[in-house]
Length: 104
Image 1 (cartoon, rainbow, N blue to C red):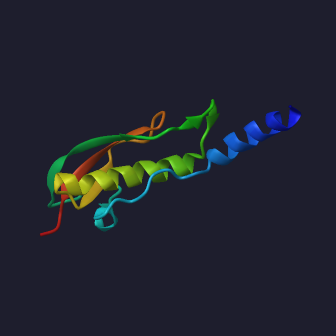
Image 2 (cartoon, rainbow, N blue to C red):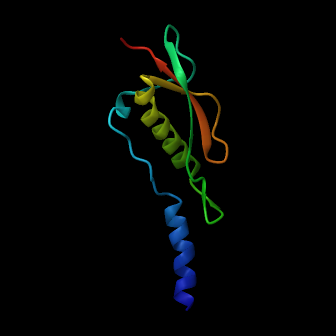
Image 3 (cartoon, one colour):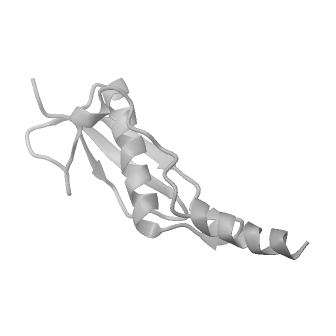
């Protein structure tokens, strides 16, 4: 019985570092800008979200940020966009992004 009590916290800690989001086809070509790019056409905005905690334990903040960026990049091709930039920082596992078409 004691072994299961040790296993559960170790499992939850290990899951906190896992990446569950993978890059979709075409998303690797999407550029991430720090701010709104000049001379580009705005194609829209997206809000993406991931689990920021598992069983009340906060996940690694860098991993959450990476997953949010990947999700936003995954959405960009569907909007006809080739560039994205964050509209603010992540908040409880969610973040808004603007999508732009800068290329030909």
